[in-house]
Length: 98
Image: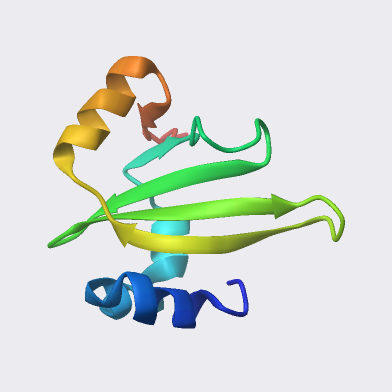
């Protein structure tokens, strides 16, 4: 996690604080995976996991330090998921069973 992630969530997305401890699960078992069309290509991904709320995790690449970090976590509306699926920015994640 980015060092300021908890502060970011507390200030901007306080309704999502309960999901901070589930980040590992969200990364390991996302329901959807995609890209943010407003970010620099190949430098970020979005993972979405459905619980009681549908939660999006934004993961970014720090080019200078060469590591990935969780930059944000917030709830997401079903309508945005549908739009991103339709545009191709988001895909349903279906792991191989092999």
